[in-house]
Amino acid sequence: MTFKDGSTTTGPSWGLRTLSDTLRSMAKPVEALDFLAHPAKHAASGICVLFGDESFLKRLVLAQLKEQVLSGDDADFSVTVFAGREVTLRDVNDALSTRALFGGGRHVVIVDEADEFVSHNRPALEDYVAKPKSGSLLILDVKLWPSTTRLYKALAESGLQIECKFPAPAKAMKWLAGWCLQQYRAKLEPTAAELLLETVEPDLGLLNQEVAKLASLAGVDGTITADMVRDVVGGWRARTAWDMLDAALAGNTRVAMVQLDRLLLSGEVPIALLGQISASLRKFAAAARIVAQGESTRRPINLRQALEQAGFKSFLLGKVEGQLRTLGRARASQLYRWLLETDLALKGSSSSPIRSRLALEELIVKLSAPAPSSSAARPALLANRR
Image (cartoon, rainbow, N blue to C red):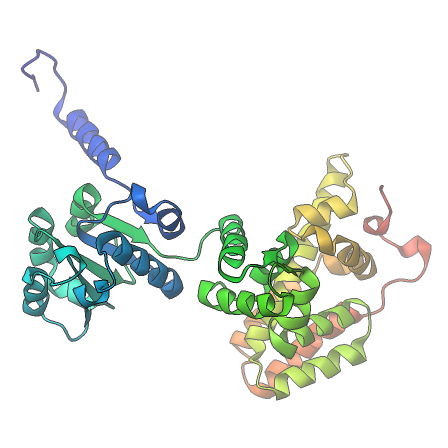
């Protein structure tokens, strides 16, 4: 192919370059926390899409968008909200065409749970992106927002797409500390934030509730510590699960069985209980593997360093180092297999209540079996390499 300036290129390579240039020119979705941190950098007009499953983030973003677009004490009168499963395209068009009496004459139209609405009206929405109503902002709240659709690509050029999902751990910790200080006037220690993320399921709404509870205990200008998180967050079930694992790793089978019985009688689901303790056990297995790899390459590694590389937090290293030494190399090297066998059993042959209890009891017995007592039998993993 020959261009007017005399340059030439072959058809296929020109097509690839054009596609590549187009993709690069498309604006990527904005992460919700980035939008909230710097809303002025992301002006909303025409259509704005909030996608993802973090409802708490969506509420914060919606509040910020309304503040950005509307003004005055009567701004709420300039907002129309529709249920996505019930609203028709005509209703949305009528609302977008209606000039608000308040809010500076601008109008915000929100379609909640709009996945079905978008699927049924995709061509019309594509046309609207090209010619939006002046003075109106349409906000679509969806769970899924595939990047392969023409509507996504059209909005990447002229609209605003905000991804509302649970952020990466480091970003979540930073946000949580800032949110705690801003909303509740309490300082959240980094170790407390780490423990919160480990204890509470990844949901910013739930984390906010726990932070509010902790802040009320800490008091204005107080400090939330890791010990407070351990004592308050998650209730007795979370503490019992930790106690059960601690007892098993200490070789106290009877106490571990009593804790397991309490959890199951309270209605704890066996597969969920396995999930709670699996995270720590996998880290023990990873640490044992790191030590073994260091020995095989003649680059021995300190046990505490191996535990840290495996993902244990710094404030837990003293405790878990003793637990791994008690567990020993032989059993630590089998943890991955034991966890897999228990998981398969709970999802298959041992899914009934009685058999699932037996599967968990068998795992506890393996974890709490006495370690070899003679110094000659002690594996190299237990050696102190400081």
